[in-house]
Image 1 (cartoon, rainbow, N blue to C red):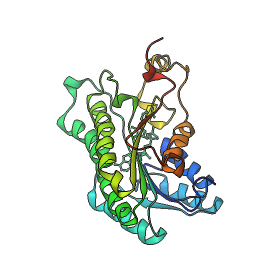
Image 2: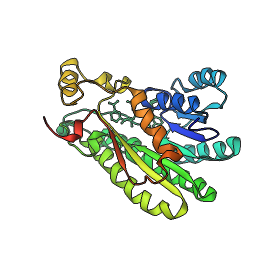
Image 3: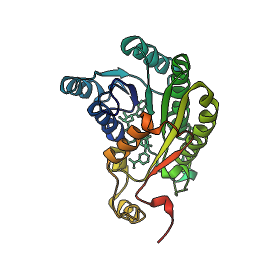
Length: 250
Ligand SMILES: NC(=O)c1ccc[n+]([C@@H]2O[C@H](COP(=O)([O-])OP(=O)(O)OC[C@H]3O[C@@H](n4cnc5c(N)ncnc54)[C@H](O)[C@@H]3O)[C@@H](O)[C@H]2O)c1
């Protein structure tokens, strides 16, 4: 099994891409912490998955906008599982609105979850992983980390920040045995897409050369690769899982 004995934290692990990643890691022998909002389905999901797998599946309530909660997540995981081998910094929200109508509060909220939250998680992970001398951090970016799209100023700014912050962290952490990578999903069929109307969604599907939305498991498989020892010489990468979206126009 590719993740036998590994200890993994997935933020935003109660839904969509995060939940699929939790399930794939459990199938491959890991113990996994679902870190998500108190109001999420994480507690019930973890209980059901824990009963079905040999590795542990725990839920820890954690809002990535709160430094104390993020630091507690890592301290508790280290004490209960004995360490942290891999982290998927996946918690995130969407945000589509005309830029001339976006309030400071809404802009800053998207940045605080999608960019600052990724930094808070990485910082806490590095502290544990430096002590271990090993670890893999994977940040969830997006095609919108490298492409622009109308009415997504805060989201694209945050995801672009995640892509380049990943490179900076990778260089800094490499001498201490820690790898840091990002994944760039195209449009993936998850609850996050609920805010898109059908006409917009059909147009977006047409921008993927493979001609469909991605599935959460397809992103989870990329996380599994980057988290595992199979990616032992991969750091600072932004691995696109986008059905060819960023390859160019036909
Ligand atoms: N679905 C897509 O098309 C797509 C495309 C590119 C990138 N992404 C990225 O993938 C990641 C996962 O998105 P998804 O599509 O699975 O969405 P989702 O809405 O299904 O899941 C997101 C999860 O993050 C959690 N979350 C939200 N705010 C949080 C906070 N402050 N603290 C902790 N957890 C929080 C939610 O409770 C939820 O469980 C996000 O970073 C998103 O930006 C998604």
